[in-house]
Image 1 (tube, rainbow, N blue to C red):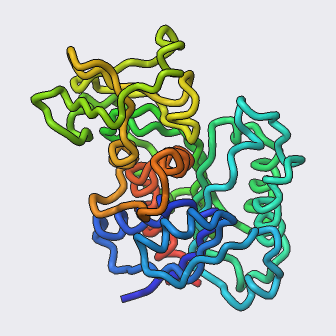
Image 2 (cartoon, helix red, strand yellow; image 1 turned 90 degrees about the horizontal axis):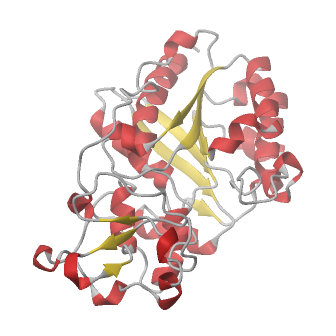
Length: 324
């Protein structure tokens, strides 16, 4: 069975890896994937990644420092990446490619433009915030992809389009080494209908107490901003995007749960991780606090959306590898 090798850049807690593995399990393609290396500058992200996937593949290193020789010696079939979103988010300074945190992506863009043809991957998947679509960083990346003969599609997708009751619209790019855009299938175009699945399917706790948990009772500083909170219940079919600031900032960081007469509480990191469609066995190392877990999952990707796009990526990359 053919093996597609994978390089992960800005791997976070492993959402891209989980999505790719989910796509591999659910597709009927006679292909398997093997991650050969995964990069992130965060040691806590690496701890979480290694806790859930086989250790020894992660490198706590800035992508911008990777030399040309690395890409030549570690040529891979697929590149998957979720670059830092701060240069492109409306809550940041929107410095775009001038932001130092965009340097890693710029390095990969330059490698794509200048590396020998034999080093190029067959397929690429990228995730970022919606503001990335109008960025100079994306413009440079698209130029490199066109020059090197890639076809690509761009989509803004939300988990609610994939039967997940959580609003988290993100930008995705799927590129394949082919001049024929038809190699990309229909997974990049979901039906678009909103889910009717209730949040209750993702909650942890006692339904007799409306899932109230004293450990997650609403912090005092949240109570000062009650009018600004997005309050949902167990029967709600949508929830606000959970950001890395959840638990620290009340406004705009994610929904809170009203548990009947018991009051309101925060979602737990386990529940938010479920809403991101991580596997049931996924867990955080014990030394990572709940607040830090909020930050980690708030900066991650939705596994189900990544899996849908990865099915197209795997299929197209497998065909490209066979014709090369």
